[in-house]
Structures are given as structure tokens and as C-alpha cells.
Length: 299
Ligand SMILES: Cc1cc2nc3c(=O)[nH]c(=O)nc-3n(C[C@H](O)[C@H](O)[C@H](O)COP(=O)(O)OP(=O)(O)OC[C@H]3O[C@@H](n4cnc5c(N)ncnc54)[C@H](O)[C@@H]3O)c2cc1C
Image 1 (cartoon, helix red, strand yellow):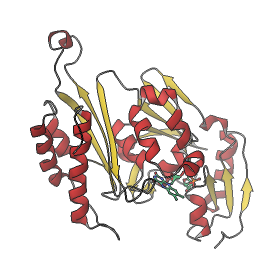
Image 2 (tube, protein in one colour):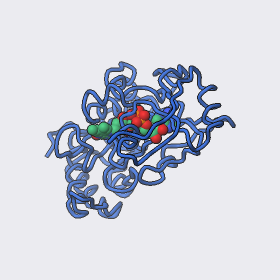
Image 3 (cartoon, helix red, strand yellow):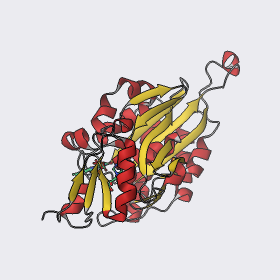
């Protein structure tokens, strides 16, 4: 099946793109990598009468370190994220997640902003943004605003984006030296959407001047565990994180976190995987990711 007919415009600036969106209203849709939108149009699940191509809008591109934040343009391709030295150095969680997204051909076209706007519950980037405490910058003809990742994802394919609004860029906190990250997912075949996935971060050891007195302190602080594929949006497992707070990553601490996970969420089952199986997989994945973060071998 092919999509219904549509008009096509290719603005050369953000102002032009926003003006077209304001003028054409609900009949317009922006296209970035086209890797989610075009299949949806071909299946006739979406039928915009005009596509606004973002690929020539320079304001949406680039990866830049600005103070303590790494700024990532919405149009940054998944493949660019995977090979960027800035991402590798300042956002290692994103670097770990990138190769898990789909296949090379899709990673070459699909974009960071497109993935966040799509808000598939099994997508990698939304969960990473939630774990990292990212700030999502939006713009429309009436101005711009910033939405924390925790408030951006509203439901399956639903976000805080208002009609005529664009994601322009995303800021993630640049990784500090004492931060540790972990990422993994369970999939049927490499490149598939995750059945269950986890993006994790924690600060290790004493803070500031206390480091001098406790150089070997391996206790975790500020633990954040962002699961995906288990609910309508990515979710932070707060109870499991609390079970790890202030403790080193011993096998006992990991088991306590796995036990606490049952209180964080009851996963939603889907066509292929029951809720019970997903709960079991989430527990196993948590054990693997934490074991890897502790420097041990995964179970
Ligand atoms: C076979 C296959 C497997 C895939 N596997 C995975 C996977 O494992 N993990 C994963 O995360 N993704 C996967 N994807 C999806 C892929 O990552 C898409 O690239 C991504 O979800 C959408 O990005 P895009 O740039 O292609 O967006 P598009 O398809 O161009 O647009 C998607 C939606 O986002 C909107 N949009 C795009 N950019 C913006 C913006 N800047 N501001 C506001 N709205 C915007 C569009 O209007 C549209 O509604 C897969 C896709 C395919 C076809």
C-alpha cells in the first residue's frame, strides 16, 4: 500500500518551518528521518495533506557541549549519535544505547527528535532521556519552552508536544567523572524493538572534599533506572533505585533491588509477551545491568 497524495515543502530555516506549521494547521506534519512517519502513511494510519521537511533546517542540527550540558539537535541521526566523540565522552549512556536502535539503514536516516516525538514505549531514546533527566526544548510560532523528560512522555505515541510545535534540541547533563551508566535490552532479534529495556545511571563514591577521606568508597547515590517496553511510557523504577541508594553494588544489594522492582510497576503484556514474562525479564535485566555496572560478569 502507498500513502495518499500530499503536498511537500522544504523550509530552510526554523522560522519558515514554524510559520508553515502555524499557517497549515492540523493538515501539516513534519518529517525528519521518515522512518516512522512514512510506514504509518503507507499503512494509511496517517494522512497529512502537507509534509514539512525538516532536513534543511540548520537550527535543528549539531551536537555541542555548553557548560555542564550537552546540546543535541533534534535532527541528529541515530548513526551520528553512535559515532560522535562528544556523545561518547559526555553522554556514554546514549553511546551505549545507539547500536540497539533498529538496523544500520534506519539509524542512518532516523533522528533523535523524531524518536522522542514518536514516543514508542519500546524506544531507546525516550528511556535514556528520562534516566538522564534531559530537558526537551520545543518551539512554535508563539515562542519556545522547555519540558523535562519526566513530563514529556504522556502515553503510547503521546507527548507534551502541542499542535504546530517542534522539538528543536535536547539537553542532557554532561557526564561527571563519578557517574556510572548501564544499558541493555532483551530482544527477539538484534535490531528489533525491545521487549524490555533498561537505561541506568548512578553516582559512585563520596562527593566533593569527602572523596579525599574516602577514596575507595563505592556506594551509589542518585540512582536512576529507566525501564522501557514495560508500560505506556518509559518509567523510572524508584523503589528499586531506593534499594540501592547509599550501598555498594554487592550481590545482596542487587537482589534487594530486584525484589523491590515488583513494587515499581506491573508490566503491560503485549501480543507476544505476557505481563508475567515481562516482569521476570525486567528483573533479570536489572540484575544484568547492575552486575555489569559493578564491573562483574552479567548473569
Ligand atoms: C523496521 C524498523 C525498526 C525500528 N526499530 C526501532 C528500534 O528498535 N528502536 C527505536 O527507537 N526506533 C526504531 N524504529 C524507529 C526509528 O528509530 C525512527 O527513526 C524514529 O522513531 C523516528 O524518527 P524519524 O526521524 O525517522 O521521524 P519521522 O518518521 O520523520 O517522524 C516521526 C514522527 O515524529 C514527528 N517529528 C519528527 N521530527 C520532529 C521534531 N523535530 N519535532 C516534532 N515532531 C517531529 C513527525 O511529525 C512524525 O509524527 C524502527 C523503525 C523501523 C522502520
